[in-house]
Amino acid sequence: MKSILSVLASLSFLVFTNTAVAGPTWYPQPVEAYKFGEMYPDEQALLFAFDYGHALVYERLLHNRGKITDPQAFEKQILAEVMAILKNPPTVKVDEDEIAPKYVFTFPMMVDVFDWSHLLHQYVLDVLASSKNRGPAMDARIQELFVQYNANKRIAITDVCKTMLFMDGHYFSKEFRRKFPSFNLLIWSYHWFQIKLYEALMKPSLLERDAAVKQVTAEFWELISDLPDSAYFDMMPETKTEAPTFFKKFSKISASFDNNHMLHDIVSDILTSPKVLEQDMRMVGITYAQMAMDPEAFKSNNCQ
Amino acid sequence: MKKLMLAILFVLPLLVSADHLPIPGKKPPGPDFYRDLTYKIRSKVEFEIPFPGVKSTVNYSLTWDTPAYEIPMIGDYHWNGDKDPHFYRMFYDRIFTKAGSYIEINGEKLPLTCVFVDGQDNRFAGGNPTPLLPDFVLKIYFVANDFSCQGPIKPGWPTTGGKEQNWDTYIYYEIRDPTIMLPTDAIIRYRWNETHMVLVDRGN
Image 1: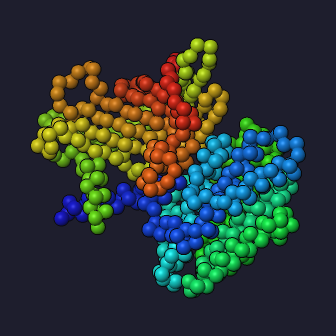
Image 2 (image 1 turned 60 degrees about the horizontal axis):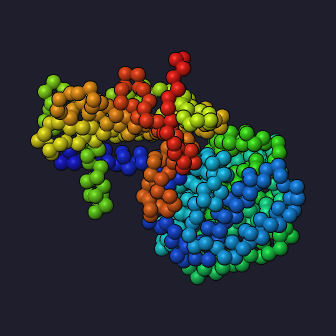
């Protein structure tokens, strides 16, 4: 009996160790994985389409660095391509390195950090959509996933909220939104959609949740119907404002998600700004990904 | 419960060390021995890709950081079950490298993020010792761009989606002589393309 216990103790150590260094693959997957898509297939497909939305523009910016003489035409073309994907979204999650191999190779740490964070996004949606219990058990389950997320310290974005200076306070900042305002608003609309889904799924009854998700989706299409005029954002949408119920209950997860969204803007600016030299791009990417994970960098004292 | 039992069946061989019949005069070492062996791997090596008219140089430089496993994983494999005291031992280790470690390929520097060791200790395998059979074989991967040191294969694949293999870029070589940790059979994988390399020993 003693030896069986010792084996089990060692086994639990191994399981813990593997979880702690599981990398961007979350394994074993949560039992709720992709349940959101079973209940809301159109919205799940939109989320898969957003992967294209981010990656395609990054890849094109990299390939065309220094050669974009007409930013408006560049933006118009890529918007048209992405809109076509949004209207006919994939039902399968496509690997980012298939869509944007140059971007993935140039920003390896960003990609690991985003992949890991996006899995948390997905699984939180999955639990919120599928949990029969709408009280403490559901909250505990989400917190449990968050603990697993944070255990992968080398690629986990901090849950300490950051000031907007993290996004906008650098020598290359705001270049993307200046040059490509419509595409920037499209990316902010993606983030708005994700945040709003959390809020919609906080509703107590299934009927209310279904209606709220439908409403959010309709509003999303309205937001992107005639960019840049159709989207009203002056600033990146934040969880605290757009999803107050979710924020109140899961403020640390909210901070982690907002930091992720800010990091997306940072990548866009690094890729667009001529102030970042091409040969420095990989190192700059690593530096800012590390900042996203650092609880002290651009720490806000006005979180709650 | 069924999953737990299956997990125990698969993991058990990695957990039990050589507490079988003892080999006279030979005591198998503990895990620290293999960790120390890993730390003796060269921290800088230069290679070239031999091809006429093309000069391709590849090198790496690393500083060790913390290991991913508390101790290396060890599994002993007996030739004829537990009654045979002779066995060969497999060991695995994954160690992070510090920021600033790199792989450089024709001037392009990539972050070297971790080292993965797949080793074999043949000293307890029985038979007559011969200089043609190495005591140790260390297969080493110097991995770029895997910041959480996930490993060569995506865990849980295919249910976890995407590609089976996880590493698109690494330097690989084998060590059969641990006295000077001589790299042999070196390969560079760069964005999934693989080619063989030879060691450049400038004597410094």
